[in-house]
Structure formats: C-alpha cells, structure tokens
Amino acid sequence: MENWIDAGSLSKLKESETKVIKGGIVVFLHENEIYALDNRCPHMGFPLHMGSLCDGILTCHWHHARFDVCSGGTLDPWADDVPSYEVKVEDGNVWVNHVPGVQNQVEQYKLQLRKGLEQNIGLVIAKSVVALLKANVEEKQIIEIGIEFGTKHRESGWGPGLTILTCMANILPKLESQGRIQALFQGLSHVARDCAGQAPNHLIGPLAGYDGDLERLKGWYRNCIEVRDTQGSERIVLTALEKQMDVSDISAMMVTAASDHFYMDVGHTLDFHNKAFESLEHTKDNISKQILSSLPPLFSNASRSEEQHRWQSPINLVTPLNEAFDQLKTIRLDFSDKAKSFNENQLLVNLLADDPLAMIDEITLLLKKGVNPIKIAQVTTVAAAERILAFHTQNDFSDWNTVLHTFTHNHAVHETLRRSNEGLIVRAIYHGAVSIYLDRFLNIPATKRPTPTEEKRSLDCDELLELLNKQQQVNQSAKWVVEYLHHGGDKQKLFNTLGLALLREDAKFHSYQMFEAACVEYDRWDKESGVFAERAKETLIIAMTRYLAAHAPTSRELPHIGTIAWRLNRGEKLFEET
Image 1: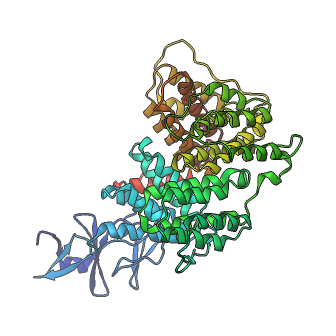
Image 2: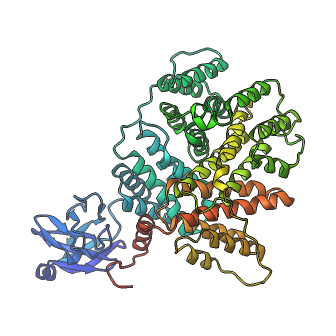
C-alpha cells in the first residue's frame, strides 16, 4: 500500500463530487464512477478542480482545454494529455495510486516530443525537452529525435530548421542549463515549422546488386547533380552507403558536386551539406541514409553564381577562377600538419583589398608553395568576419544577410576541408574569397574597429544584455565587448551571455548560423597562439555581437514558450501574480 494515498471516505466524496488530495491529485465522482487526475492542467498548470465536468469531459476554465476524465486524454492536442491515476474503494474509503499509469516515463516523454513535432505545437515540444532533461536523458537522444523527424518529414530535403538544430547541438557546451533548454527547444521548434505541411520523404533505395567501382559512383553523382537529377543522385548516395563507403569519401563526393558551380544559393548549399555531415556526429548510424538523402533536393533550383551579372561584370571573375582551377589540377596539395607556414596577416589584407585578380593569384601561389588549404580557408573565414565587423549601419538592413552568407559559406568550407581532404573542394575557398571581394561595398563607409579605454572597471555581462534590450545598439555593444575582453572578462561567461542574447529573441535563421559559426571558429583559433590568432578571436566575437545586436530586440514569443515549460515543470503557478 506504500504507493496508495487515502482520499477519504466515499460518502464525503459523494457530497462534494471533487476533492484535491496529497500529491496534487484531484479525485472526481462522476456518473457514479471515481476518477483521479493530476490537478494541474498540462497546458498551463491551471487547477483542474476549478474546471467543469459534464458528460465525461473535464474542461479547464483558463484556456478551455478538454479532457476525457477517464483516461486523461485531451481533445485539444495543444494542451497535451493529463496524467491519470488508478483508483479503488476499500471499506468505504477511496484510495489513489499516486504512481501514474504510464510506467516508462522517458519513453512517454519521447512519444510526447514526436507528437509535438508532428503537430508543430511549441509548448508540447518545450515541455517534452524539459521533462527529458530532468529525467537525465542525454541531449544527444533529444537531438536525434529531431533530426530523424526532420529528414523523414520534409520531401524538399535538408532545410533551415535542421540547420538550426545542428547549430544548437554544436554550441550546447557554451551554454548553461537554461540556455541549453532554449537551444534544444528552439532548434526542434524550427524543425517542426519547416516540416509543417510538407510531404514525407520516402527513400528510393540503392541500386540493387551494384558491384562496380566506388570511384565510378562519384562520377555518376557529379553528372546527376550537374543536370539537377535529384532522384538519380539520391540512389547513388544510398548505394555508396550500402557499399559502406567511408563518410569522409561520401562527403568528398557530395561537396565536390556542390562546388562544381560557384557559390550555389549564396552559400546555403555548401553550408547545408556541412551541417548535414555534422549532424551525423549527433545521431546513430541507422538514420545516416535519411540524413544524406536529404541533400540532393537542394540542387533542384539552386542558383549558380557564375551565371550572375556581378560575377561577370564590370570585372570578369569567372574566367580567372576557371583558369586557377585548371592550375589546381597540377598542384599537389598538402593537408598535413607539416605544411608550410605563411604570412596570415598578408593574406587577410589581400582578401580585403580591392584587387580580386591579385587575390585569386595569391591563393593559388600559396597552394603551390605547399600551404595547407585548411589554413587558407580558416584565414578566409576571418576575412569574412571582418566584413561583418566593418559593416556600416547606413547600409540596407537586409544586407546584414549578404555579409552573413559569405561568412557562413567560408566557415562551411573550412569545416568541410577538415573532414575531407578532397582537392576539388578547394575551389570553394576561391568562391568564398570572391564573395568577400564582392561584399566590399558594404564596408563603404567602414565601421572602425572599436578600441578599449585604459580606464579599468569591472564589467558585468548583464550590462550587455541590457544594451541589447534596445534597438540600434550595434556599435555600443561591440564597444562593450572589446572593453570586457581588454579588462580580462571571463570568456566562457561572455559566450553564455551572447548565447542567452540569441536565445531570448525570436531569432531568425541567420542569427543562429552567426552565433554557431563564430563560436566554432573561435574555438579553432583558441588552440593556436600568436598575435594573429588573438586578433582573429576578437574579430569573431565583435562580428557576432554586432550581428546579434542588429537583430534585437524582438517580441520574444518563442523563448517565452520555453520559459513557460520550464516554470510548469518546476510546479510554478502561472495563473497567479508573481
């Protein structure tokens, strides 16, 4: 009887028909039957004993959610089901088993999360995330549910939602507990939004009985992508997986095709490929087919920058790029740690200069000298961040995304080359470099790099959050961050604060990209020493801060849902004045 609670005599229950007992359970006598439910409405926690019960339907009086009094099941999916409890009568007394009828709570929470994703209900998703984390479920399992759902329920392939979720998975170590809840919830919510109204993705399957060379598959794949044959390319990817081709080789095959044309879809195509391969690190092997088969649809309508006017006029950039790519065929690229060193600052200056042909020649010369392409890609990413740092607020607001696209593309190239040493992918370094050149007009006039004052004072990260509560605080926020860094501020605390600044807003797709890419690039440079590495780290933080400040504040609706879920899980009474 240790699990049973005495709910009092049956005779007294017949007088009142409702009784709230220990453990927050409400007992109802309805139509001569006794029922026990959790007294907190699963939607927003309003006491159900204050609702109305008629014809077997219990209605909460706050938002009018309806529940079957017998099972606790809801007629309104946005409210979620209410837990029900076993009841018995012995010797005229009513007893309630306070252990819910569902024994495997973790599996129930996972099922609840999947339902929230299917029906695109933010509060259900948020409550599921909070409950799973409280039950000590690994974050990786939660992420995996989202990625599996997103790749199976979006016929148009990998999209912004899955990219956001992967970004959030990558930056979880930068955040404290509240930030981690919001990161997971918001990533999953964007997956649900992306899949809403979409047809499911049914896999075609591999080429049955294929026994050919894996190198041939690579050639076939590039040919299919060239003519935008998404079904043929999907079958080739699934065949490569069936033949157990190494993931790095599959990455090389797919990203090579993505770099056969210039800066496809303003960099999104390559960035989405990078995120899809990163998502494999957060999931089990059994959904890799679903993940990688979501990439070919990206090519069906992807723009090819070599076809655009600004890549051909007033300076023809297509011809010198193709000439450089012809030279690449004769260069023996060195991806090793023993590759030759070079003047990183000089490359940065050339990337930001006004001579694209000299810049192209400089990259080719460095590769001929044996400089590691990964290192060139890393410096190129810093140059792209410099464009964001110097972006003037007199520009059209939408052009924040122009410099952002260049930055995330270069970041994706850097990370892809770290994963796969395929020579043809090096072409994407050039694509990113040219995009940096084309963005030069967005630094006219250029915002000057903020400099710290020598006056020593203690800075609290709450000051930054307060700054970001106001619009038009782009330069002020950047100045604050430089002061904070100059006076020895805790960098981990700063990243957590910037993460909270992102996650407390109704952030758009590009803001998530900006934060994650800057964090990852910062961590890469943090493993190095020297003046350039220190400047690169500062550049990344300033660029990130300026971008986030430009897009704040918002109405903050989405994070509010996450906060509600957390407060409900703590047992707070949202219906009372705090």
